[in-house]
Each structure stands twice: as structure tokens, then as C-alpha cells.
Image (cartoon, rainbow, N blue to C red; front, side, top):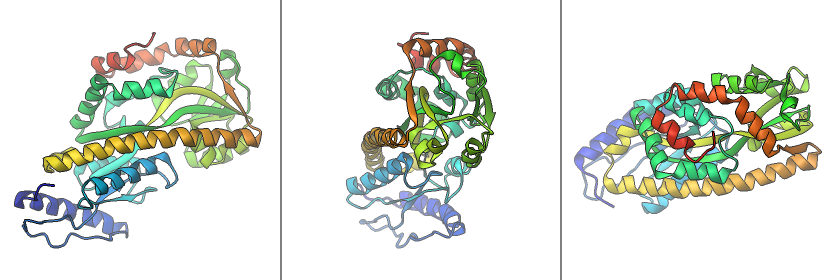
Length: 349
């Protein structure tokens, strides 16, 4: 590992001094920068914060913790990252802003809230593109596409280190869906995202934005008929208890990005950048493996409860994609054509 230069030490001093007030305000500051001289054997004596807005028992947290662990291992303990989960340092929007400012170097979160900051990420709102997670992951890892998406993050002030997932988003409902016509009239809770709303309207459903904290009660009191989320969210929040069916619409991948402030990353010595890049690759592979295992476990939990899981036919999925053409066009109009074409390359439109 290369020695820290005086300039690098000064940069890191400034960074940690910007981070200290944020952590102190949250009441969780535990490690402070000490011994910041220009010694030849300068060692990182503080932990860089990595923040998520997700609870501890999630793939998001697994991804973050594995990255921190690998960074420590690959640097022989000389590089330290402390993970703060469950919105301890702020919600998704807050974290994006503080990461952009450099106050919190690392953030792990779903791509959905990032669209308002980087509009080209709406490419991930294109519905029903992939028939399997393997196909989706191959596209994410495709060098051409990954490079284009990395540029989007760089232009936004971030550096993309890796992208894992929580599987596909699926629909849970009290009304069986065995054909395209069965979506009609279903009052489904969605995120407040114009593309998501347009998608469900195209299927004939009645999409209703609602705070996630209100979803369980909404299902219980039949204010809504259905909702959509990854399997992990459906089980961890016991939503399946209020639903008779889970329909594998697999309409969107629930992607999770690991990002770092771009200026912070570029200020690091080359060997430290390489360590972080390798650590992110290892963490991405691990998070995907854990996601697959957890999805299988959640499916088993749902089936044991008596809630029925419905797999849609190829014909129904084709009808869904046909109905969603308007959503494709609206997204295509607002994102970089190169990104759209690369994402859809090999996909029948």
C-alpha cells in the first residue's frame, strides 16, 4: 500500500472535518481522526462513513457490510469504513445530497430515488425488459452499458463502484391474476413515480401512490387491493399476511447501487482506488448470491402461509409489454439514446 502524501493527508483531514458535524449531530460519532502528521507510515485512524436508508436485515445492508469488510481485508486493515443503516444519517434524498457534497463519502441505495438527480437512470424504469435475473445482471455487467451508466453517475458527482439487486419487483393482491384482463380495476399501491403510475394504468389497474408505512393497514382495511415490491420487502413487512396471491409480474428489477463521491474517490491514491474497485466487485457477487438465497427463502415463507404464488404465462407477459409501449416511449424521449439502445440491445421490442 502506498504511503500517504502530505497533500493526501490534508485532503482527508478536510473530508473528515466535514463529516464530523454530520456524525456528531446524529449522535453516533465514534472514531475521530488522530495523528494526522506526515509520517512515512501514516495510517487511516478514522472510519469513512457509508450510509443506507435500509434496515439492517436487507440485501442493501449485506452489500454495504461486505464492501466494508473487503476493503478492510484487502488493505490489511489500513482502510476503514463504518456502515450506518436504517436512515441513521438521513433518508434516500438526504444521503444523495450529502454524498454529492462529500460529507458522507459512500452510499448504498436503490436506483429509484436517484432518477430525480440523474434522469438517465429512468432507463431502469422500463417495464418487463428481462425474463430472468441472469439476463438483467448480464446487461448491468455488459462493459458498454456499465460504462454508459458509470458516466451518468460521474456527471452527477458520484463514482459508481457496483450494482447488485434485490430481485424483481412482484405484485401481491387479493384478486387472482391469471390473464391480462385480471389487472383491470385493481387498486394497487405504487411509489410516487410517474413511469410506475403510467405502467399500471396501461395494464388497466388503478395505481395509488401511498406512503409505505401505510401499506399494511391499507391492505388490512381494503383501502387498496394490491401492492408491488421485491419478495424481501413483502415478507419482512408481513404484507403477504393480508394477501391471497403473489403474482410474479417481475416488472422491474430492484437494483441497488454502491456509490462514492467522485472527487473523494479521485483524490485517493491509485492503489486505494484499486482496493475499493476490487472490494466492490466481490461485494456485488456476494450480494447477488445472498439475494437469490433470500428470495428462495421468502418464497417458501409465503407458500407455507397459504398465500398462492402465480407465475404469468409468456402470452400474458407479451400482452403486458405491448400495453406498456407508451411507457417505453415516454422514457425513451427523456434519456440518452445511447443508454436506451444499449439497455434494449438484444431485447425484442
